[in-house]
Amino acid sequence: MQPRFVDLHTHTTASDGTDTPRGLIRKAAEAGLAAVAVTDHDTISGLDEAEAAGRDFGVEVIRGCELGVQGQYGEIHLLGLWLPRDCAPLEAALARLRTLREERNREMLEKLRGLGIAVSYDEVLEEAKGESVGRPHIARVLQKRGIVSTFAQAFELYLGYYGAAYVPRSLPSPEEGVRLLAGPGVVVSFAHPMLIRCPAAWFNEIVPRLKEAGLGAIEAYHSEHSSRDERFCVDLAARYGLGVSGGSDYHGTAKPGVRLGRGKGGLRVTAALLDALKARRA
Image (cartoon, rainbow, N blue to C red; front, top):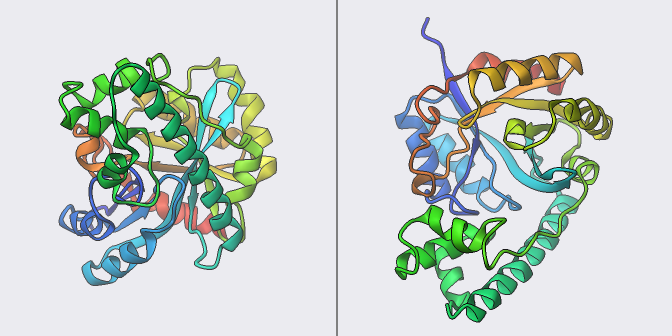
């Protein structure tokens, strides 16, 4: 019997991906994926469309979202998997976070204006077309205008941490973020932990704290994780009695080197991993 594969970390036009929710699920079916988690930043607005597409194309769709929180060494990203349809408190909190995103976006546009680069917020909204608007959309406007030659250059020169127009985000604490996502049947996963520039020993401090708040898994398999990173994360999860998750972090053409279900070519997340997470939900 051939192994079945899944992707538990993807993005659509509801946040900063370039595929519509339906388009993403169609691509998942074409790639032979058995299941996909749709995990847009700070929004669940694309989930109903994705689920409807899942029924049409025969792909299991897991309702999710990705949330940024402020850690000691910078942003930590959390994935909520199997979010319920009725999650009014979470929706209200995500709406607040999107409002903070908008305020930050406008501050960055003001900084760009001070540098002689006039970009209107309407241009950014037109580029985004989704509910959650952020730096990637500003970067695409800058690239289309010819102000930068590449998407990456927009972050290097203007929007990244050392960029001339950078404005820090106002984010909840790690524990607040986990508690916000956690609930009956929800698995909260620590996304791509090895992308955080921190001492390895710090994970022995933060992971128990997050587990106490409701963390259920570590994302070991990710497009930017090496095989050594994967082993570290699997061992970390085992040490604290957590599940293991994995996904490409697919964004469509916004991350052209990352393929759905395959990451940068070597990523393969089996349905057995998904089945283990489902067992943990019980």
